[in-house]
Image (cartoon, rainbow, N blue to C red; front, side):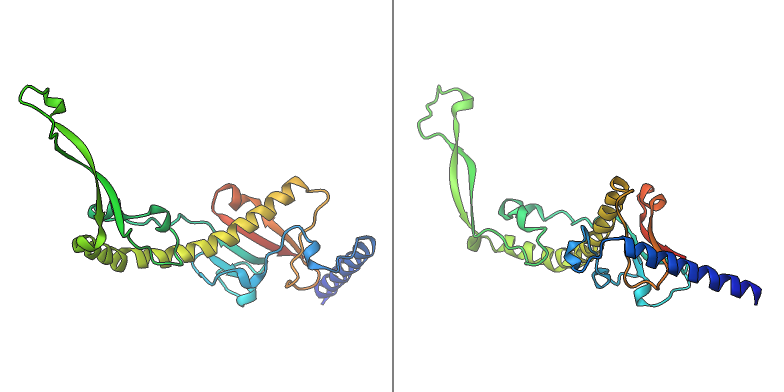
Length: 220
């Protein structure tokens, strides 16, 4: 009972100090006035890499941890078929919102015999490079190889990459907030509005320095 009484007094004291600090602080009435904002619903439910108490308590995490986002390597797309290399606009490969398509035509250079070459013409001048235009419709083997690559490689990579992007986006935002805190330590504050009253949110720098992830702790 004595310990419970002391704990309750400590909580009331913290509540009082918080209210006192609020009276002395500028009241922010517009959320857009904050330098950085992370909505909890933006955290993807990728349970291997992300956690927030907003989803409910998890016995694998300390009760003071409200948000944890782990950084992991970007998924790598397999090499495209060699037969398709000249027909691909590589800038479209990483756009996971649209299925990349082959170019309808390409220009290539091929080596042909020089029609003006004579018997005594030097060997290096016996042939010349000629520009040729190739149409995709004339090369069904290229289209077949591309369709096989899209079905067996690209679709699975695109799904993994979209999931990676959703985690990376939140990680980058939390890391940016952490950097802002480090640069403006004396004049900045971190607010977690979903947390219970009387908690102080902090970003754990240890895991960031280890390139592991970002953890948001909330402690009394």
